[in-house]
Length: 241
Ligand SMILES: [Zn+2]
Image (tube, rainbow, N blue to C red; front, side, top):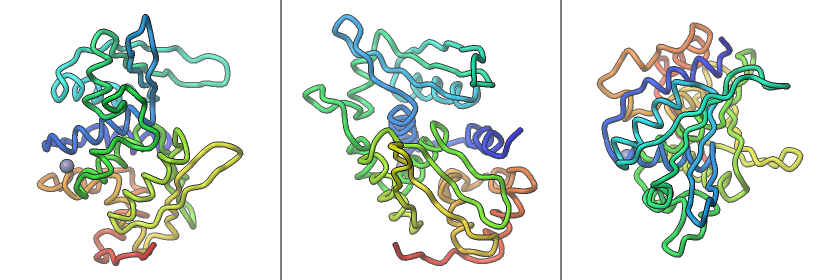
């Protein structure tokens, strides 16, 4: 399994208890993985994910936190796409989910960046937003001399919102337009760099892993080496943006 899939699998297992964090994760994940569609004048919320574990996590949160049922559609590989894709769809109660998550405002207009409650949330919600965005559209380059964590964004406003969320976690992230695709990138120079610990903490979350020491360093040996060793070797220093 590629590094990105392993990390997504691990992230999908993190047990998050605080409702604010679960809301922020779902809102961001839906914003990054999905879309709002109109069907017969009603909003249908949809998210397409590349791991079954992330889809199961999303469905569980949609039910437990927002009180809605959802459908899961599994798309078989086709063309260039190698693995299955998992579509989570909220059809009947899409309108109310879109409002609850802040994906549309009071007048029903889609949000351009991230939902207000995520942007204005506590740092625990910044971590949750990064977790959601990474599960939706994140990737990690295979570890070598340098590593980077990257998320493809649904637009420049969303990319800037992620840069802002990272900054609040004292992580330097950069928004980039790569051939018309908005991305936000966190570069991790090497294992001893304070950013390595920061990036690990950012996606796995301090709050999420509190009291769960096993999740702190479960990722594969190579990631453990490059990221977790730095986490235990040195307390992260703040990195000015
Ligand atoms: Zn929170």
